[in-house]
Length: 328
Image 1: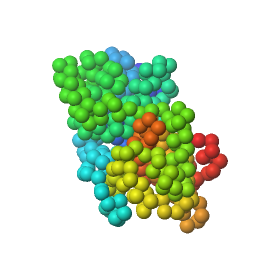
Image 2: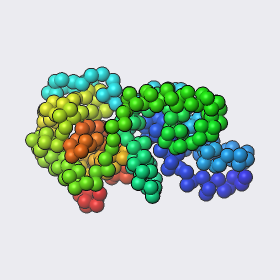
Image 3: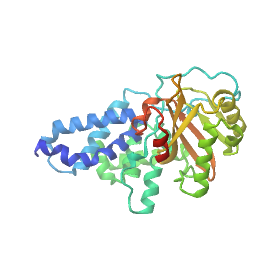
Image 4: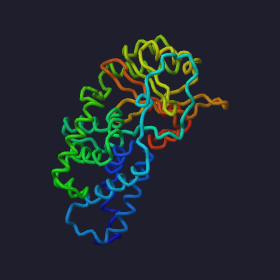
């Protein structure tokens, strides 16, 4: 094989490998680093690639093993709601932020690549990146996680997965059965992600944007389900219940109209917003990425990731531009 040809013929797999690494490790930043390492390892050994499997399968072998090696040295990534029970006192100060804790991160919808033609495949692609599923995957042992992703998300045959992981077909089937059982308990099938294209859902998202920008707690309250959840890593504190969530936002977040500006985006197959906060210079600067989980025409979960470094992978500008926001 000619090494000079490697970049040209392998680059078509970069986006799906990034999605694969993200499912494995739960961090878009780590996934980007792991894909870079995957391509470096593949380039170095490309001269020895004999074509016994497809190039795509060979790259997945390298990416999966790169992720498994990385996971040996890292704690699993989590959301605040996976650590302890909800806070019942929304007006008290939050527990200190834990910026060094391995928090789960959202990922832009661009990881899904070009949409498939089959409507069923579109739903499957969207669902395989939903935030609740990514969080649940992190609870699986790494090799079980790899088996489940390769078999159920990428639909690889059991024999191919066994060869990729250097194990047997019975071992793959056993790991898959255990992983499916645990995943069903952690992220049941009814936790579906809607595409937010129906008129009432568009109205819902517009209502959330206006409620947030205008600090309108009454309007926000009307958008939430009774058991709505709000969480904001790196803060470990989280809240459950429509009234509790509203009281938290009223007392600690939405205290002044105009403090925030929102730009719509998409994350994990779900509606999301880039949040910009008013700075001392009078401009709104990158603050957080919020991912919404919808239940019909209400918001069931608000996951705000207070990490401005997420704006780059989402293609969001560091300072709010009203014209750009209108385009989104």
